[in-house]
Length: 346
Image (cartoon, rainbow, N blue to C red; front, top):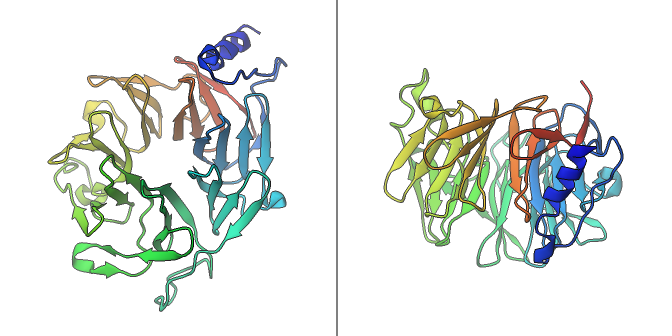
């Protein structure tokens, strides 16, 4: 029972600063609050304005955690699919959910399905999902417009209609469909960054034109030099650097040059997620666990993980870390070890 007391204290650490007090259940199996996680990845996290935590999985639908219990949402509750790939709260407090087959909007009471129109004159066999959109990632820009990254390219929604956003990829010209962009980020100056595993380099959109940046020389020590010449834009840190991850490690862009971080620096090859905490530490989720970077060294954590492949990290408003894994569900990280919040079926 001792760790539940400690965990409760951690979760309530800022209650005196105006946060809503939220008690964890005191049952012996309080940490096993999500049932029957099997083969799905816990793909994306969100903490909304009310402090609720949202967890999207690729098999079990969507979960909402209010600090006391989990509520599950599936196709039986109005979702168009149980495979969730991204979650966003807009400026009006509505929750957008990107799935393997499309887009849903939750107004606090019910889900509605949002149809993203397919671009016209698609080449044959371009969209294997037949009139549906696999939504990988999304954001709401500073100007209020919503950006959606899908299997058929990038779309901008102004509140009334969708506009397809083609990307200029050097010799390939403007790609009118199937851009294969998977992640998107807006920096402090309003630039939009995009990247995916089949792109060369990363893309920067300044509001007028798209620039394709190619850090060709960063991973030349690997067995397949060009195989890692892509990047998922992850975050802009407090110093203004843009961080990207890929299957060669990670790299940092200071506005002029790229700096790589690889196995030589203490990172594994496959880095899936990077966040910055309130203290300025960077946390790297990877195929073998979690690493904290204090600007000088990497510290490795994996104690308590059934499957060490981390796909998502979130620091909540109280400064607690949550991680989502491949196949073994959701974990709370107490600073040293991982505490499972899922009933795992092997």
